[in-house]
Image 1 (cartoon, rainbow, N blue to C red):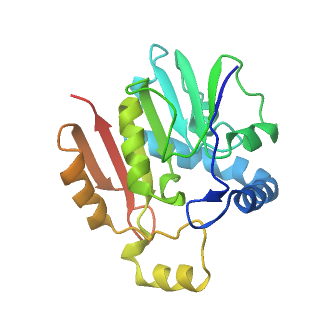
Image 2: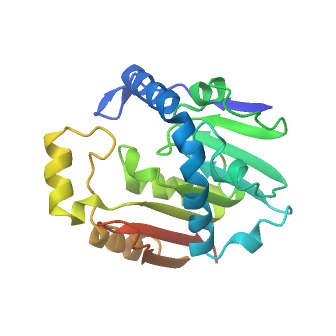
Length: 220
């Protein structure tokens, strides 16, 4: 196994301490372990099929995933074929140590925030991330990094800022996982201003009562 572990700040952006984030998420994963196993495979397959990307995983390309969780995410649960696998997460060490699965030996594990991924430009052929980037502290910086380290990426995340009820609920609850409350129009502006040099597809997956962005980016 190849591990890349970055030295991180004590805080998760300006949201909470890294220690609190680790404790909160590890407890959540342990509690939700069996529920997750029953429900997420369908969601992962929906993500792959929405992006019509299944044919790309033919075993000849390196594949990475940001924020896949302790079950190996889409890569492992959907048994994606890859010449090499990259698992990237803010708390990759802690997720790995939960030992919910037998992790592949011939893979690279990266313990780092999506806002700053310690990989060279275009290192990964195909990068995927589902329902993760909006949980960070700077979603647009996460997108920049995903685009930078990959030749092609497929990303989905929530835009709860387009739903007034969600804004009220999450603000009142001081929701630490959805503090940004992005709007779809903000993502459109970002794409127009920063991704114009690439082949880009942006759409709403229409999965929830608020927009769920599906963004694919391919280098020209």
